[in-house]
Image (cartoon, rainbow, N blue to C red):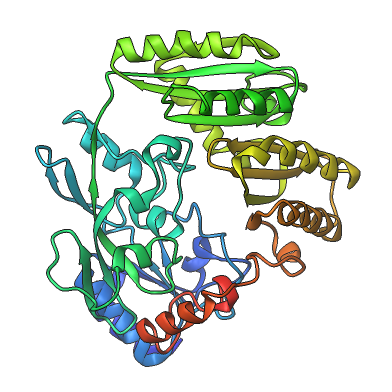
Length: 445
């Protein structure tokens, strides 16, 4: 990297907030070490850093806590990592309005802790929820089991401030000062993986914490029985906050069962009498199926179980070889989980599945034993068969994580469809020099 650019960055944020050389090693991405890492402390400093990088033509990788940084194609050039670590403040909390504004580098865990002091919360529970930053959750559109009732970030974000590649600070949504004419900026930013701008502040709508929050674990003899149970719940008068399906390997990894069967994890929250009624009704509903057992988890036991579900990709096997996310019709979840397991076994691999059964989002984890070394070609072949399985069912698959040797053989994203031309035009308008996360998103954007 040009010495003059390093000098400019140092002048902007201070010498101790710029890393170069071996100091950048914690930020290696796909085997590529960044040329520098910079830690701005305000949105104005973020604007200055981006303007300097844009003028120099240096690629920039926005970096929150790094929990989802592996999503995407490898960067063609490592360039500059822009860490949001220092932008971690709660700016405003209006309990009466059920809204709060925070900087993008604040972790979701710290945000929830602050809101909890006033009996409120943000109803998002993505994987690694304590460590993930607000900006990272938005940029990757991460969500968890409770999306079944409470929706995703698109339903909860009401305002956003973002810095564009040229250093312009723009705002959209609630508390608007200035909008980018013609664009719904918050909607554009969600799921853009940092390719359109760097999110620096966000305003959310909140909810009061429920008086009671319970997790019901129902175990079944077969995956298809759990699938039938999920459909029965969806057709009932129950209003669960989450309906997740686990196969036997996922149950084993989470300490919820052995190597056979399947489970439904059903979240119920609200007033105590509502939760108690729904718990009894759920037990009655599932009693007509091939249920083996139901049990209720509350407090720390409940929180631990949900946290473990979010961290399945890290704990399912001694060595995780790939993680893929599938999107499919909810009615097809159980069949896809069963057939996906069969495919993995045919290739000599293990697989674990956790699905948000009522919305059709499936996390498929591929792994090997501690002693096994699996060839990248075998992993790639399995992922290819998985993707064909999901496509044949009318769904899609996104490679969430895999070693570089596998990514060189398997596309991360599905081929872009008809909206791709519009995506290219928006990217060209907001980032004309293509410095923000170039080449890592759909279609090489």
